[in-house]
Image (tube, rainbow, N blue to C red; front, side, top):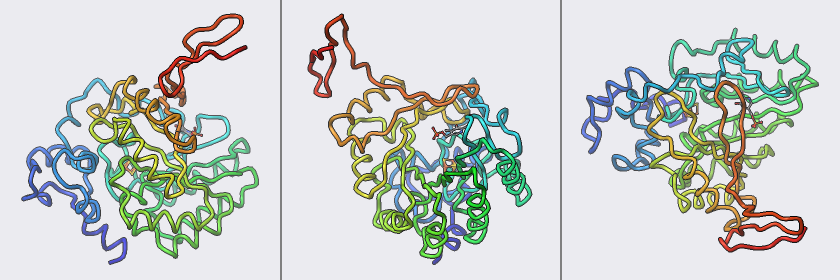
Length: 344
Ligand SMILES: *Cc1c(COP(=O)(O)O)cnc(C)c1O
Ligand code: SF4
């Protein structure tokens, strides 16, 4: 089966999970009516039992409907949007949505208000408007091609978008942000990689959240992507019940770097409506970072960031390491937990 045939066989309604132990069909149906569900056969086979990390990321849960103080768009992506599907917040870079569909609808998605919904639909006309904005805005040197998942778009349309962006002299970097290496690795075909390898400005960020996402198929997809020459990164979301422990996160970072993917960010879960049950405390996030730094190569340690509400942007958080300071020295905590004196 090719990737489209696999995708077509996805479970998109609660009935499709009937008979799977732990699947509460009535509850799933209620939630999926608000936030779309899509679990493709590849993920369905991997996700094991109720409550397991891959299950939690994919199966609708009643908690999605009960975190009402949270907002749909706390980061104000729409406010900073000069044309539909494009967010221009930082001076030199934009987010450019070229699809609102995904190979799996992650329950923790920060664009839950849009993905898989008709109102969030991207069309050829919205893509054209986004391209025109970028062409006419010389400040934009970095374009983040995202969605939804940009790699759910056909190869020829991806090639069209990459060619148009590549031809803009002020665009010096193009980044594709995609979760398909984890959720539908069969999408990474030789044909797609040929398209990607023709774009010399390309970087590619994946989104892996748990070591169990590294199957032989996913590792093959990463091998193919590495050969395109695009530097590979990963944006992980800190998720309660999925990866909120130093041991799981360290294992995830080892898997990434073993596959030559450079961990870029660990995102603290944004305060997005429908995702509150995934949010951990900041202390948990800092403990996770503490479990990485020094214990693993610096290449295995991404920045842990919070994204400020209202469009304030991302800010990295670090565990406190300076314990004391005087005119002659700093007192610093090492990764081993011991206290050291650093001369000034
Ligand atoms: C995260 C984000 C970016 C990209 O930020 P980097 O730190 O460069 O990866 C760009 N625009 C918006 C609105 C963002 O939220
Ligand atoms: S793949 Fe990305 S955009 Fe799509 S549902 Fe998951 S987190 Fe959201």
